[in-house]
Image 1 (spheres, rainbow, N blue to C red):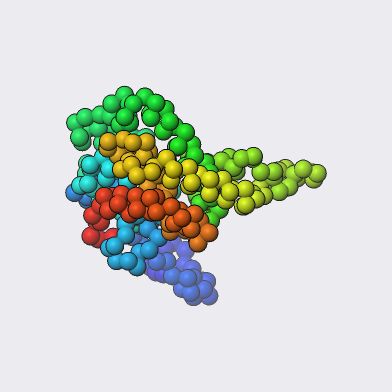
Image 2 (cartoon, rainbow, N blue to C red):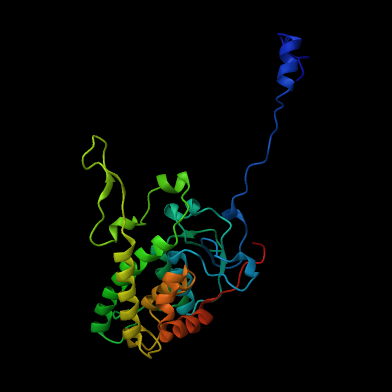
Length: 282
């Protein structure tokens, strides 16, 4: 520290003390979104098995994987996937986020509209299902997947939460909101402290999961797509995301799917249609 141009000289003992704590200036952290991209890029949570070195780009997160599958099954394969960004950096504080070559960021709510623009066509009033009855039935299967199946996967694959992810607001639902009946709080019943935490019994959740998988197997049967559609729908993308995640889960969860060869074969076939190319510089 120099005092040549200083009006007041710093005493030598203090100057020596300050020298023990030198001031270092570091460059600002690089913003991944600022990197130049040449094609639409879907930012996702990372895959489970990065050591596969190019064999598996499926996100470990069901929501991210659903949108990977959605784009591919809609016939949009000219896009990259990247995961070198924190979840909180996504639009709304959550991934996935689609980035366009012009730098524009799209939330999941806007991805279907973008897909319509790319294909110069939109999904019809039946949303790709064979009739109105199948379209209405699809709502029940979405509820089953996002309820019974999602609850089991959340318990079997607990996530590590950062402080930012806990404080950020977003559309993700807490596990207790999809468990039936709703679990009682761990505290606050007979104490002066407010209710906090939940005690979620695992067996009833697993039983509902088992019945849900059985129902999905029965409904799929030997059809090419769920509900007998002639082409993949958003429901098929959702089903693939949950089946893939279940097959990557602990044995008790994985075995329930493996009991049904039609589900295993369907997941493998659809998986071969979903895998997109990966950005080279991840």
